[in-house]
Image (tube, rainbow, N blue to C red):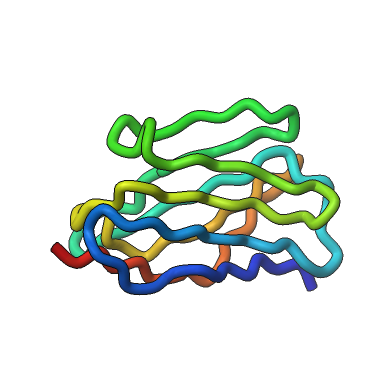
Length: 115
């Protein structure tokens, strides 16, 4: 069964860093792009960063210059390095994988940034 497993969330002080990981396991079809989304209480889920199979990346304006997305295809894993974290970055972060015919979501990992 194809699934995405996230890890790396937690509690950090403002200005700190966290690194999220998302590993694709099981019978995954070919993945075209992977991305990180987040959802804060009372808000819609929003794109944070995405990376294509060719390595092209895009970022939300609110995280550009602070967050970096990368992928290790040998490990079927995507990472999100988050630096200079702010309280407004607090949310549940979800990993998403896009294949040719479908998409998959991870279960989410909580990131809390204290002021």
